[in-house]
Length: 436
Image 1 (cartoon, rainbow, N blue to C red):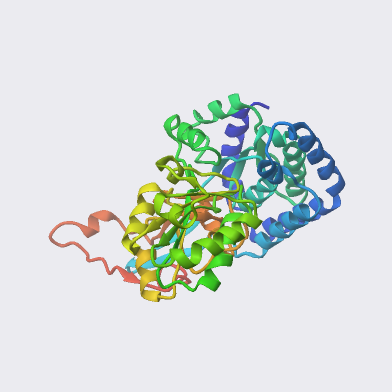
Image 2 (image 1 turned 120 degrees about the vertical axis):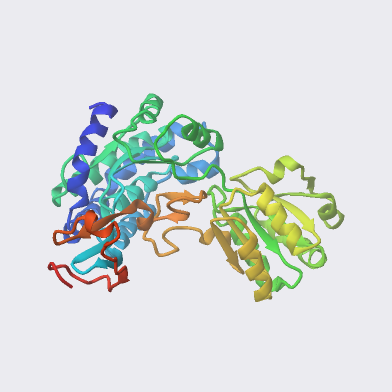
């Protein structure tokens, strides 16, 4: 089946998916987790084929993301079960208001419809995205990196069929594989409700420029840690190391460290020793190199670079405001952290830094849907509409207005003898029976 036909059929199927019961969706998620465990050897075999074909072309950080073996499969299954434990995001009453006696308005969450997700070479992402789409009642079109084609083909089949075995209508998940499919996707204005692209800045910008379908995502992950003058050095050092090195090839890894001039003499030499142990290449501004003369010089290009590697740029600043200005100028509005003893300083930083995630005294690596308790995530949004930060279930639903009447007409509410609206907020659980 080609993509255009699959998208049309999925759009037609979307109302049925939106009405799936919580019990059925959870049963399907548990069936998916069970299937991942039972078919582990097949998944590992397919993934090994991907790793073998890509080993001569990709660097170690990307190969690490591509690998889907052993514990990663176990963790993926556990992640699916975690999504099953989450509250159903569909059908929640956000507000209820009496417009007049016998006229009740409710604002109720509902699925977006059909979501298309383009993601990088991470087979585990396919499992996460599919589980979130299923729990939120959305149809899902997936496109993974070509390096993971064997893994993705198998996983898409296993996840789809496990859902169907539990009662989900067939066709709820479709995998596209070619670059040509992406261009076709961008034109499916009537059949796709949202595109979530993950990948390079150039690719995300291409998607945004060439479609009228709403796009949710982020182009870069240029994350910062700012070390304030009142920092606790002993607490800060392991946080910085974790933010940079715990997993370098991800969008929430720190790429630039900003250090207050008063903290630099104590922090930088000790940090250099720790980063040497992790084999991190440091690049610094001229003031940084006064303390670390052996490191490379940083340029403006470094401030705008998402390394996704064992590289960290460092800049010494004279004030909190300089740090905030640097982040708002060069950052990607993803995740930025401050290390300081001062709550007031931290609050100022978190209020003025224009990013989706702002942290105090902890690693930027916490910017993750699973760690936020969202079960998993489809990606990170850095824009300012619909959803922002790690996007979990709540970012995959919108809402509709339901108005329950008892014969009311607008004509009664206009003119000199107009009936007045009561506009009285009522409890969300208020039911309608013609009167309330």
